[in-house]
Image (tube, rainbow, N blue to C red; front, top):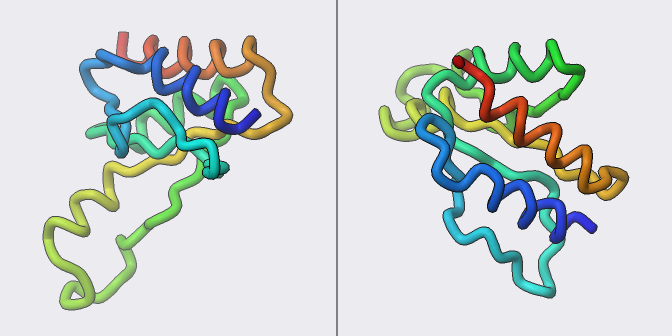
Length: 109
């Protein structure tokens, strides 16, 4: 179910002007079970707040804001500020994934 949810969400977000998949191929290998759908978004915190308003909770898995400056490259810090993991839980039905995709698409409109 996680593979199916990932692929459904990845395809639904294809072409989004401000949110892109961290891994651009929406097809998940058969032997893989993704834990989430990582995306890169310039307004990560704004998107996360918007999703919370819809009762959709997403994780920030790589926060670096409190790290000493010399512990990461500027590129790693930039990616960290833009990375958000969208949920594709196995309990989600197709309608849940579609609702998540719609909430992402309507962010900022």
